[in-house]
Length: 92
Figure 1 (cartoon, rainbow, N blue to C red):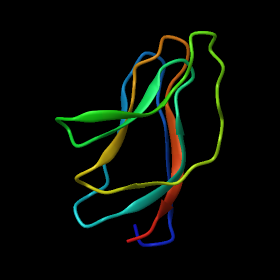
Figure 2 (figure 1 turned 90 degrees about the vertical axis):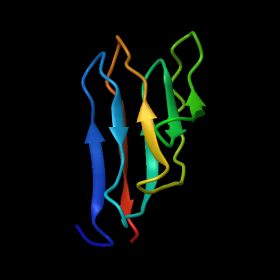
Figure 3 (figure 1 turned 120 degrees about the horizontal axis):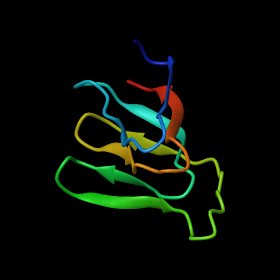
Figure 4 (figure 1 turned 45 degrees about the horizontal axis):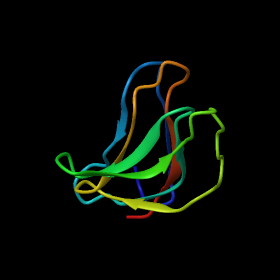
């Protein structure tokens, strides 16, 4: 893959979905979500929520910009209602 290529992924129900680019690769994600749980930024040891949906299952489908690389990447929680998704573009 090269800069400018689209990156995306679709997880399956009840499965964690991680997206960790290869070493030296950076991506700008324009969307990353899961229906009733959370999407977090992680380094494999420490995680912090980027988004967490409320208990009424309202999906905030707001476009965003999340810069990730091999060190700091995204993870979506395992959800019994849906799989996680992400989409964006490789920038380096």
